Length: 82
Image (cartoon, rainbow, N blue to C red; front, side, top):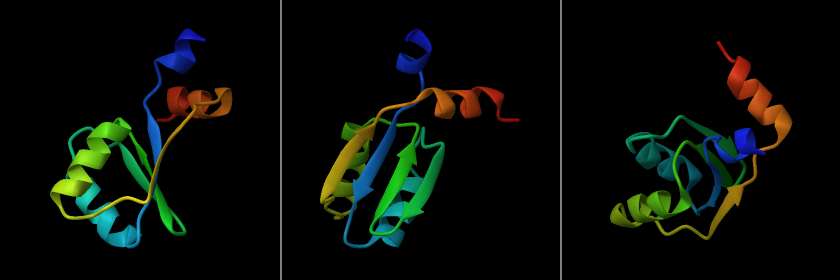
């Protein structure tokens, strides 16, 4: 449980223009990765409140912000990644 709670947050962000949001979020300190997932993007490394604030500062209004729970497989991949 402690390992799962200590892992980096992953947030699903729904926006009208995912490519533009991804470009804006790449400049946000702490972002480890951004993955496109259709009409949404997955942002790893920062909390949802930080993502929301950064997007709003760039006039991008998210339609969804959902924190994703880490599972054991994701944790294993994070710990064993080179």
